[in-house]
Amino acid sequence: MLPTALAPCPCTLAVPSDIEFGGWLAPPTAGLTLPAQSVHLWRAAASAPAGQLEKLGAILSPDEMARAAAFYRAPDRDRFVLCRGILRTLLGRYLRRPPESVVFDYGAHGKPALAGAPDLHFNISHTMGLCLFAFSREQAVGVDVEAIHDRGDMESTARQCFHPHEWEFIASLPEAQRCAAFYACWTCKEAYLKARGVGLAAEPDTFEVIPAAPLAGDATVHVPGQAEQPWWLHVLDVGPAFAAAVAAPVHPQVIRQFGWRP
Image (cartoon, rainbow, N blue to C red; front, side):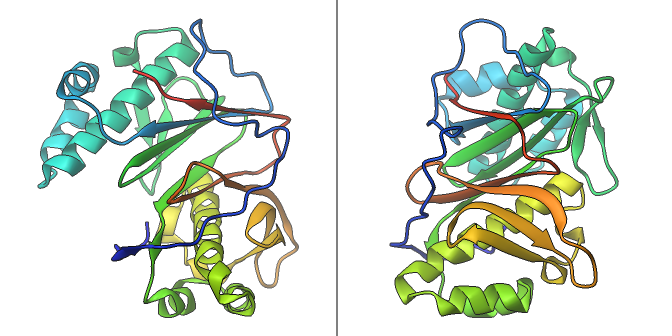
């Protein structure tokens, strides 16, 4: 996650009108089915009435409630409860079992995974105002969402965290597009690292995201000294004032986007 910034950025991300990304749909009322070679994406507001938070908190495990209690700020605590409760609810629907029965394992770098369901993968990201969830069959998946801000430190952050070629690309764009390009690059990089299960434990300046088109669409990953990696990265339109991306080892055949409703 990027450091906190100060003011809203006037830039917006340009997202292609890919037919597979047909907008954020109302959630299915019946059981959820996640076929092989598909990715489901869910977005949700990162705030909820106290009654809804209480219901979601009731399905969390004791260790999750302990993690929630450790947050110093109430908004951070509530957002954790909300996101974990939604995650458990959706996993319960995919698995056809009560959400409180879902058990997580954790990787070496803290990435959660389902215990006893190795073919169902998921990832979650949240920022001030928005939560984003991804689910897939048979392959890892990663997502990242960031609130877009006007970054006075954009160049210094990019030079510190990005591959040199990425900042060269951003700096070559018209000034009005640089903020959006910065966030498109950052979310693609973090989604890729999260899909790999390493997060920012890996140095983000040691690989390069190469967009198929400026600010939008698919991208590839290049690690200096290695052959081009066939990872699928895609910039997402999650709404004004936010930037987001999804990553997976192989381009899924089907992508569905849903909006969470309590």
